[in-house]
Image (cartoon, rainbow, N blue to C red):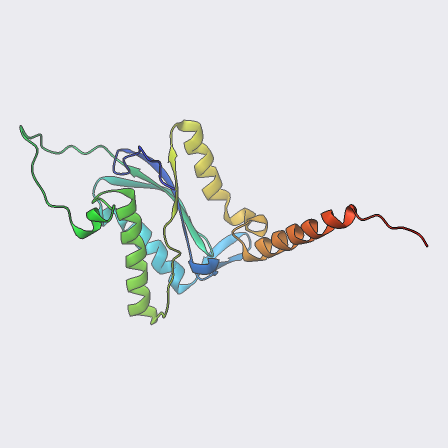
Length: 194
């Protein structure tokens, strides 16, 4: 969910999470508490690093390509564009009419996902979808939030064994929840002796 009153092309820092479809572990594996990227993972990394080549007014900060998701901090910097006495008229493109404005965070994420998909089809003969629809974001408002986000991203590979994005952990968590829901009604049953 995007913030209703937020202009996502406005200057600021954004913590972004982009997930693989069905949370499949297609970008790498954990080996000795670090991520060992697959060929698809390398394409994702190269495409992430290439974002500033397509969007001039951004800086990339800390990021990590995990097994089934990508975390990164994108900074949109203030534009120093020419000032005009009267606003220039422009036509909205198809993407802008659908709510994705040029230079916005959504446009960057869409471009990144499209580049990974295109390259994976061409270079790896990849079939099917790579990405879940949409993405998650958080506006970073101050230094402590920035520090916490950087720490979270950097430590993500170290904490994979307990990460809820890890399908093994998610399965165990769901099973525990299911058992807990089943056990709760049983606790109210009284056994009567004959």
